[in-house]
Amino acid sequence: MSLLLVGTMAFDALESPFGKVDRIIGGSATYAAWAASSFTKPIHLISIVGGDFPQEEKAELEARNVTFEGVEVVPGGKCFFWSGRYHLDMNTRDTLVTELNVLADFNPKVPASYQGADYVMLGNLAPAIQISVLNQLHKRPKLVIMDTMNYWIDTAMDDLKKVFGMIDLLMVNDSEARQLTGEHSLVKAAKAIQKMGPKYVIIKKGEHGALLFYENKIFAAPAMPLEDVFDPTGAGDTFAGGFIGYLARINDVSFESMKAAIIMGSALASYCVEKFGPIRMKEINAADIGARVNEFINLANFEIRN
Amino acid sequence: MSLLLVGTMAFDALESPFGKVDRIIGGSATYAAWAASSFTKPIHLISIVGGDFPQEEKAELEARNVTFEGVEVVPGGKCFFWSGRYHLDMNTRDTLVTELNVLADFNPKVPASYQGADYVMLGNLAPAIQISVLNQLHKRPKLVIMDTMNYWIDTAMDDLKKVFGMIDLLMVNDSEARQLTGEHSLVKAAKAIQKMGPKYVIIKKGEHGALLFYENKIFAAPAMPLEDVFDPTGAGDTFAGGFIGYLARINDVSFESMKAAIIMGSALASYCVEKFGPIRMKEINAADIGARVNEFINLANFEIRN
Image (tube, rainbow over all chains, first blue to last red; front, side, top):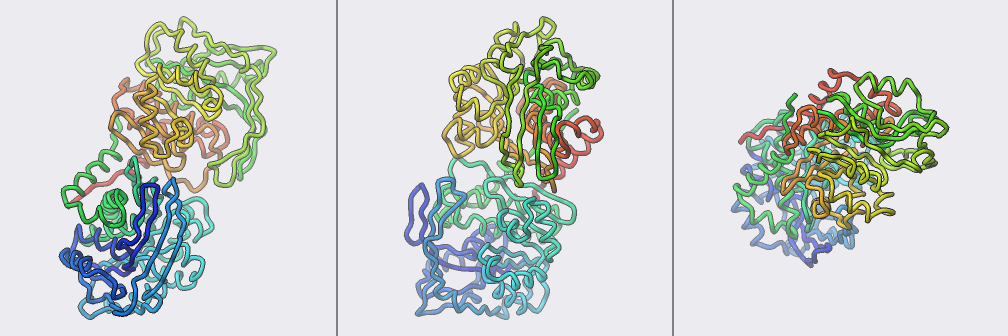
């Protein structure tokens, strides 16, 4: 089924205990597109880039059935730029530089060819932009998921509450869930978020995996225990893209399918962190993904006998 | 199969955001015995108590086939006493008072009737005491597991290394695993611990569940997501007691059985934290445990379709 992805396409400069890169392709839509295109096609991107966005990056994604009609190009402009440094624990990081560049004037337009998408992912962006995209859709999609971050919780809570009323699933990390609700217990936080609108809530816990909440049901997915996390940039967007890409492929939004989709997203994210930027995502194929999914089955599987 | 448990039998004073108790029964052997006696018998205790240890607590455990021949009673002495206050996040706590009392002169003696135990759990105690118990056993048990804590890592590392060479499985929490090895990655920490002796390593992560390591295999067990953790005291000892009690019942120490045993231990621990001290452990029955285990199966179970 066709999938619509809204998010940033950017350049990142990254430093981790394992090394540094000065300028590598990044952005939530980029990571999500690489991940989702492992499972489904076409993938319709909505984003904005400067004239500096590399043609070969575009060509690589187009070869994976990612369409760029909804990606506005500002010829004299520059892509969004983010620079960050990860601490030794790889769970915390400092933002060194944020340059909005073309993103400052992003006013997304949904092309006619994108109408009718059944699956929509709103990557981390100003909630006003997320709302604008949803308002332009003629048909209510089968599933709308969104990601957000502490910055929008701090600065745009009113808009966030509006978009929460328009989506099916919110994906946040544990600290964002706590900040959003004032609840320390993640069970209580998820319930509070469900009251704000989203029927489904995924709380990402980094190296501790993720929790999916729906009605009174909970699914706990482990993360793959890794010796080294080389670069966590994009892991959350890769997870989200893999999650919704898999659901679009099997075209089912039941709780059971979402459990499997979380494992798929986790498998892709566990590859993403093995190298800087999306490098590893460009190397893996279906067999690699299948092998990692089998590792997840072995990791989580148990049988009780009496 | 018979199970030998070594640990403390104590009084605790506890404060949590949910209330306080001034004097409640506690200690690693007490919690482990309540948990293990849900699955197997007899359970042979090795500990030391003062004349203040309540007869009714002893009688309740004896009714569950827990034997006290190895529990030294110092008539004029007082039980080990610990007082602690939990923070709002329930993951961190301050120790307010530690009175060793009779524990200061604990020199365990293994009664002849305890010889031949196939399953041995060394609860958190001075490693010299753990070594002394193992040296008194005439037959190598089928499985020896142990727990320890940061205090012994700080003060008795040489003895710890000795006992690591004598056991099969070490159970520590994540911060202790990192402290013990200097490795931040839990995968690297587990490998480093395996090089110190124990073939099996369980790393407990509190609300994030537990990891079991054996050779190159890893099992990730979730914790039950709870709205409230009323009192975490004894959860680790309950987990350990449930783990080894279940293995003693099915009399199998394969990796697959250990996975199931972790779920059993987790199910009991999730009950333990619902009330102060071991109160909840005294209320639950086999049906309650079965119901919670089913919740764990639903929590962790997923199926992939393509």
